[in-house]
Length: 345
Ligand code: DOR
Ligand code: ZN
Image (tube, rainbow, N blue to C red; front, side, top):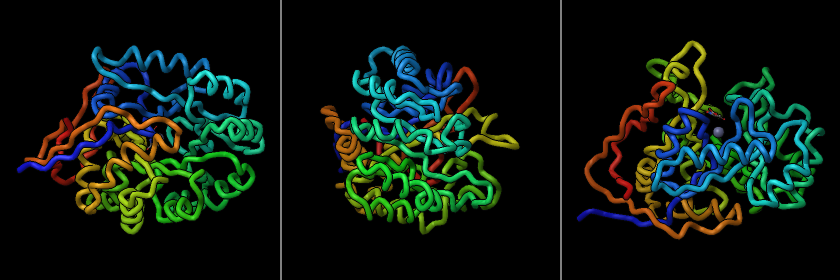
């Protein structure tokens, strides 16, 4: 008898859709399974103003194939010049659901990010006042800090002081990758949430580096030691409502990944739900999948859970394409290196 599981249609609380040809190719991969997604603003140039976000939202909706239903939840990219009133207006008219903080230089297209936190104090105060969450890329960028320590150091040096200085501000630690991140969330209250990606539940740094460098496993924050992956799996599958799915699905074409200086990002939109269900089954936690993928995120963002559902059915291993074609070149799909048995219908 085949086993099946029906959950509310999930949402992705951290997604890169890009623009142009790549947007057109990857959007259906997300919209097929997900109802909504928090759309990352790290385009070139970044999505900084309400006007930028409205234009980007229109481009996303016009790239959506006929018959597909999907709601992009827009964000603004926080810069040292961001205007608090513009942020408040974009929130008031329902356009944006969060503001994204990239420390300058932390990752792909983060050059316009924040260097001096004093310069964004006014915007953060306004966000606390209007209850608009801040999504944080939690890595320090100082060259003397080892890349594997950047998240833990960020928590101590930046995040904790920032939260103490802005007590009313709700914060999402994006794509946590360490036990330190899990512990920090657990030690706090419901005003701090964290997204966890699919790929960080599956790979550790050995997958990236042992037996040859595997550029399609390179992402930021970089995958850490096995003990951290296990801490993330425990958190994601625990049922704790402060943890929810943010895939950080981040398409780059193969030439940009398979290069002497390859871009960071794992593209997981297509097979995320099959992988996650497999992971939750391995952890004997299928009952908590709906919380992680469909319920905890809306609760944090103050939005309703989707009324539609998806059904996951267990059967023979499913094959997913190795690559998605775009007019800019192929994008390789994340390979979880395990058979996937759960089909989404
Ligand atoms: O791996 C990543 N890719 N991490 C990020 O923070 C950015 C993303 C991207 O935009 O490619
Ligand atoms: Zn991201």
